[in-house]
Image (cartoon, rainbow, N blue to C red; front, side):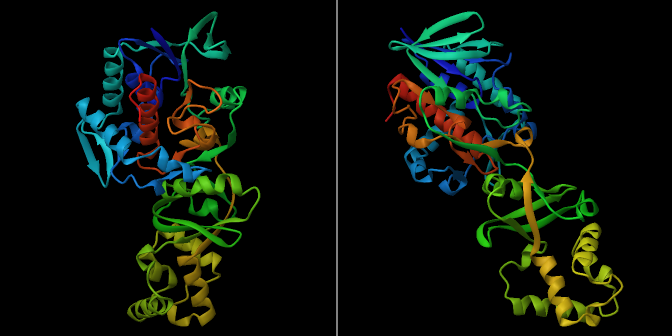
Length: 410
């Protein structure tokens, strides 16, 4: 009987185990946690956003993005949806985000564990794998005082994200390097950004709908729209998370800057339209101070910061402002500049960017240099936007490898 070791009983590892196991293939899932799929329980604020209906490749990222289409295919996407349907999961779909209808991540976890055990998958829990190596054609997995021999080995150890100590999440990368695979620089993604500004404490706690644009050395990189949270260290929120992968590494080498429009409903309007819009508002609110003029548009703490940064007196009126003052005010309302000085560390990141390079594996995610050695999930150099994409890649990559081990991959 063929024996398969999967190091890591997270989403990708469990999905792989379910699809690799068969009557002639024994699968053992190793994990240092005492329960499988522990991290899954915290996803989607405990509700498990396990998929997204918009599976355009623009939502997935890698340092080798040209290789993504050979892995993330329409076929595997459909098979993932069909699989969850076969488990009896009824999706509650909100703006394309898939949640179990129970709204409990534990429902997905429990169903996956049941499916694993029905397939005969064995769990070795509470046992940290401290070493792996080859002995002839076999892989040796060392856990505690035991050594076991396997025909196939799957690295599903996850990433550095959410761990307070790097040693807790780096094993997969170290194993990959031990076998001679290339690993790109790993850095936080889906994480809050730190910015400069002596006003940060003044706006801390504000939530606002925004259009946020990211620039590198003055060149536009990407924009995101949504709610952001203004903090005493910088900015947070989903749209910031989606931009963070581009900034969390590059801020060390380039000037990374955010420009925030606090009135995103004006995003497609011309400068002339915007000037006219504010002039009409000025006529309507002719005798209003600038605080009252802005308070119907912006949260009080935010508008006070904007007036201060634009050097506009809070008691002045729109009609009393000079053309230069009006232009300066509109700049801070529609393109508030923030220089990125860093990001929160790995312990605050939902996922990581970087990892085992896709060029080191084939389309079945098998190491090109080492037959029967596979990598799935976050340990690979693939990360997704917020909205179910990182779990989506975990399911897809786990299924791809499991089917390949079982012999029914493409």
